[in-house]
Length: 279
Image (cartoon, rainbow, N blue to C red):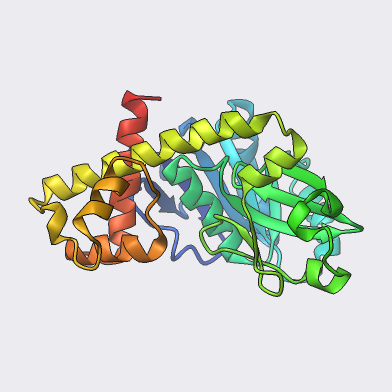
C-alpha cells in the first residue's frame, strides 16, 4: 500500500484492478493493510458477490464522508443487485454505480486523479426521450433529447447510437457527427451558465498552457523543438489562446521522449499544482 500522499485510493476486491494504477492513484486488495476509512478520497471497487467483504469499510468511510464511490461490477443478471446489497447489509448510496464495463470505472478514477470529475463523463444512456448523463463525480444530469439542438431532428435509432469517449471527454453520435460534453449538457439545463462556463474553460486552457510550458522548460526544450507543431502554434497553446488537441499532445509527448499516457499523467500533475496556487 502506498502512503497517504496519494490523491486517490482504491480498495479492489473480487475484480481485476489492472489498468487503474497511475500517478496519484493507490490500488490495493488488502483489507487489513491500513485504516481504509481514514483516506479522504476512497473508491471501493468490488464484484457484487464480494460486497459483504468490503461492507464494513464502505459504511465507515461513508460515515466520515470519505467515500467517493462504491463501484460494483455486475456482469450478469443485474436484477439481483439490490438483493446483493441487502445480503451485505448495505443500503443504496447516492455514489453507488453498478456496471459491467470496467472502462466506466477507469474513467471515474482517472477523472478524480486529474481533479476533473465534474467535467468528465462516466456513462450515459437514452431512455424514453431523455438523455441521462452520469458524470465522474457520480452526479446524474437529465435532459430531454429534443432540448439538445444538435439531436432535435435525429431519428430514434440515431439518438440511441452513441459512444462515450474512453477518457470521458464527450458523448459521440457517429451517424450524426455530434459531440456533447458535460458543459454542453449543463448549458441546456441552465442557459445562464454559458458565460460562466466559457470563463472557466478559458482559465483551464490557460492553466493547461502554463503546465505544457513548465514541462517543456523543465526538459530544456525550446518551442521550436516540438516537431510537427509550428513555434507560433506552440506559443498560442502555451498562452492558453487555443487548446491542444489529442494529436498535438501526441507530438508534445514525442518531443519529450515519452509515451503519451506518461506525458498526460505528468501534465495532470502539473495542472493540479497550478490549480492549488491559482484556483
